[in-house]
Length: 383
Image 1 (spheres, rainbow, N blue to C red):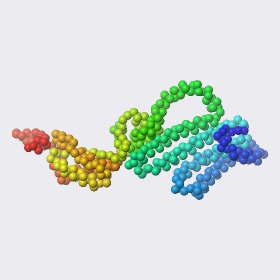
Image 2: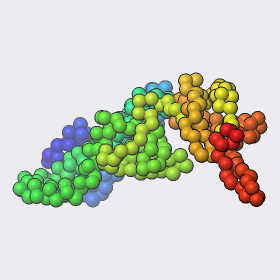
Image 3: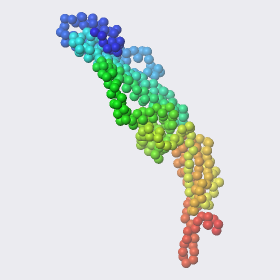
């Protein structure tokens, strides 16, 4: 009896051994022969799996080959694959009826195709993990490393979806009834496909958006972004959504299609380097040149500064105070935030210690009959 193509090809070398075992047990009760063959196939699969996973790898591979992760995930799918192949070899030698053998072989063929899909998923995951590990240490400061990680993560999930669909389709095709009805269903598949397509439009649009993001790279893994007023880093890009790690450790989940239809800020699109801003409101009598020299002294004393930009300017003249703005540069968004806080604290401490009169104050002017009126800093300086 011919098995279905997938299991027939895989189990053909062992079929004659199963037939010989069935012939040797010809005098036994049919149910016992079937049980012995099935249990023997499962035990043989377990023994082969143990030999391949526990004995052979210790002698021929080591961790320097990068196969330790493979050996962690290999045992279960390997055992199931061996069991399916060996069962496919012994089913023709059992005492089952002809229709029962056909059903069993069809089910084993479907299981074989699903296991092949599982193996492909494992291979994709291991390959992606290896590629991502190569640039993990430099991903924050290297735009090419972020681009590389984004492409691998998005394409991994896209290939996962494609692999699952192909494996399911191949498993269903193992049953002749599905193949027979498939042709007759083509006429109605157009209308049904239109209905399903409309119902699944959000999912499909996000999948397509994921492919677009992998190709065009508007954002990448560990990019610093501002989305809907929330500042954080791109932590994960799936097939349908993006996970943003906000500064307070919360997670913002954004659909991919939304990102392509709405504006957002990407602070590290071309380079991880950023210029941070620090603002102070000080009195009009504050010596700005002294503060410029102090800013230079502050940034030079911390490794957070990358040595490129350190500028102090008067940006506004308000009725009561003048506004100072410092521009300081850092290698990445995290360092830029810490540098801004550091400069702000040190400059305030300097003003409090050496120029307390420079801090914002409210001036009053005494007039006749005990009345007091507010006086602007400019008026006070002129007086």
